Length: 564
Image 1 (tube, rainbow, N blue to C red):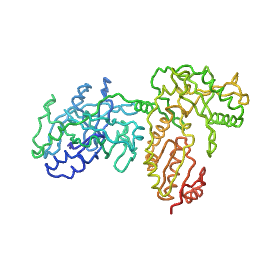
Image 2 (cartoon, rainbow, N blue to C red):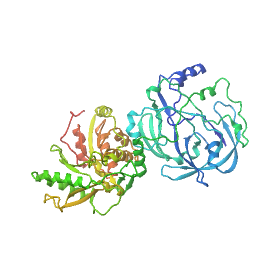
Image 3 (cartoon, one colour):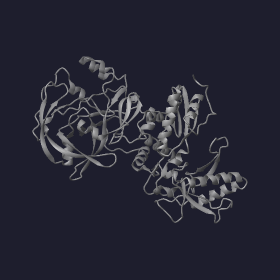
């Protein structure tokens, strides 16, 4: 079988810029390499994962190139020896190297290697052993400002570099396995950039710009052909052939300074929080369940039971002259019990390693069309200034918000403007049992008795409470995680136009707006979330919705004059 080796890069590699691809002569190509006025670069497909010897279970973290244009899969002799993989047979193959007119014949050992997938399972592949796959990989930081919230919400197969680095790849995954290691999910970020869903994690692929401060740095090209130093193997590789044209000094091109990735770097807090989230999120029944992202395994939270009781006493005194507030407050508590948002728990019953009580208070918004009274939980409360609060012990997580200015500009381009809200979004995300005891709070057994003496009931959250420092992150990450399970055009629209729990979007015409409404409702209903408070500038949009027998639509709030 013939194997044709060709040009290949990783998902953050810089290729020759757009101007250089138009050059035909060697001189023009050399000039193009020095020209970095254009900062668009192509991102192809790589992943970092664990390679394992299936017999000895010896493991090494390595980088993989996914190459659907290769007929074979390869492993470097270096990784082959490090893992001490057994040779299962030998094989003669024919290689066409870049610029070569004739094939080169080499004999390679064949071995099996196991690759770790994102779900923790291993999958075995058969590979040809070669001296080197690439000499060096050139990677630079890229500009992700416009879609930072999306990048932070997924687990990338190959982390994006924060500075100029050098790296190598020790496994090339060819077309024979390409389909087995990729999934059909694909998120369109823009016309030239996508997130692809292989089994190693999400891959950023397409065309993008680098960070401006690197614009004046020459960019490089590398080719995924075999190394010319074939004599290093003891398996009888012949030496380099002379088929490359002497007119093009490819060796000089490939030997330019390049940049790579470290196998393991110290992650900032946001990355650690996101990693914890991706490893622990579960879908149970009809909704997602998450864990609180603790900073340390051993948490030094003081006993704050008396603080919580004291704050409840203050709240009760406030209720003395506002019985209607007390009634609404208690109705919220009872409603949350009925809906399974909170649950009563005995003091002696403990499911998790941390027991903590969160003080709460009322926030009143008379102008609200839905919830006029909200209960807000104070995760920053401390027993004294020297002690920690629960918020001090939790990762805040990434601020996964779209750029508001861009969002509003896109919103104004729509002929049919639409805004909607996810009902009680935080309370639709379940809290796993081991995290619930950290969200305990006190309330009155008998609300008509305005005293806490012998009148205390203990509750805890089964959903993510609003008031913890990590709650916005858990909401945003869960929404992003859920949307990534869908691959429709509407998902891309929501990704670009969601801000916390508000969808600020629109369409070019009424029919497209109705489709957006129906698909949005369906997508979020799959996670037990209700999208409500739909408002628009189009009377026709609302009339059509009534024809479709849609409910929960607000037709009395039009911000703009209808657009014909």
